[in-house]
Amino acid sequence: MLGQLSRPKISKGPRALGLLQLLPNGKARLIPVVILVDGQYYDASAYKASPVPMALWAATEYEALRTGVSQGLFTVGGALQNQQTSEWIAEGTWQTAESLAARATRKPSSPIPRGLEDETGPPVLRHSGATKPKPPEPVPTPTAPQAPAQSQPASPSTPTTPAQSQPAPSPSTPTSASTSSAPSLPAITPEQEDQNRPTLKRGKPASSPPEPIVPPVAVTPKSAVHAPTATSKTAQVQLIPAISDADGPEPHSYIYDLKPDEELALRNKMLALAGDEVRARAKQASSKQVGASESPRSSKQRITTRPKALQPNFEDVQFRVFDLSSSNEPVMVLTASARLPESGAQAASAELQYLVALVARQDINGDVHKAFSNVTDTQHLDVEPKLELIDAVDVDGDGRAELLFRKIYDAGSAFLVYRVIGDQLYALFDGIPGE
Image (cartoon, rainbow, N blue to C red; front, side, top):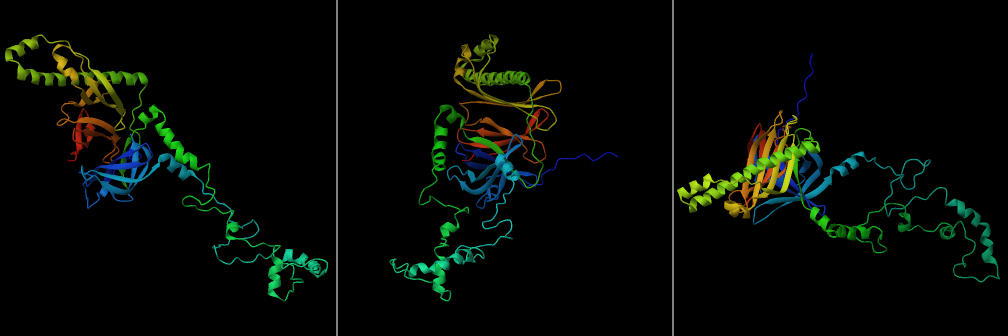
């Protein structure tokens, strides 16, 4: 009999997606993106915002996932809304995956309580200020040898002082018992009593602050962040998708492993496709400009003398390869900016900077198929946004990953979630930028 195949656990929702911002100073903030409730996607910054959105309720935990791999936990502490843009953002506590793993594997320490020895039995709870029980052994031992030495104050040759004017302590008087025990067993103050016990300190102590600890905390981070120029460039805000869901499958990596030569070959193929998209965009823009200024006859003559296709100059190329469905089929995403070199009729378009986002899939034969393309330029960001890839993340909790983009306009930004099916992309959520 064949065994049953294990299927990934599917989330029943609600399932919220946020964007975690890790600041250079170590603090973290969360931006709500989308929430899935009963199979429907809603804007997480507006869903049940009465007054705080449901996705930003206090004590809500988000697991930060970089390409499916857990990076840590963020716990919402409080939420704020920008009155100008109406955007919500949450602040809270951030714990890295390393600190959580170290805490889980750390063995609980079991120090021996103060005053407990191997042969003395169970520990005794003592409260500060309470009367301490007298020890059975130490008190009578030092008082025994003091009895024969009481003949010294009776000597007439020794001058008497106020402290020595009390000779021959009598056992019947309670005052003599206390004075005789004072030199042998000094009184224990509360400070001496708690000398070997760990204490909590709040604020700066009144005397002798710990010198070795304070200087690194106050000085070292500032110099480490601001000293070299290279560090300040790399110390940018990190953006990591974060999921809050009490159910759903276990996270796993969506990275598609490639050898360096294989990655370079796929990158060149994607750049070739991106070059075609940029030239098509430039041709469309130039045809509109020429059509408005030229007559049909001159336009026909210009088409017959078509120049050679020019290769754009790409900058800020970001190329990533994912295995979204764990089927060993790579999905490639390329984002870049490009400029066309000046040449004849295309000299006017050389001043434009084109912004391209391209998604393609490679089949089992190694052929690359374009699934999605978005090309705009710096002069049309008011109507055609630039797409910036955030990461691959499982938005609906079915074990497959979707592509999370941020679309950027001149006046604001919003988020976009695409599902890749075959050679096409389907928008699961398309946000509207704040007014």
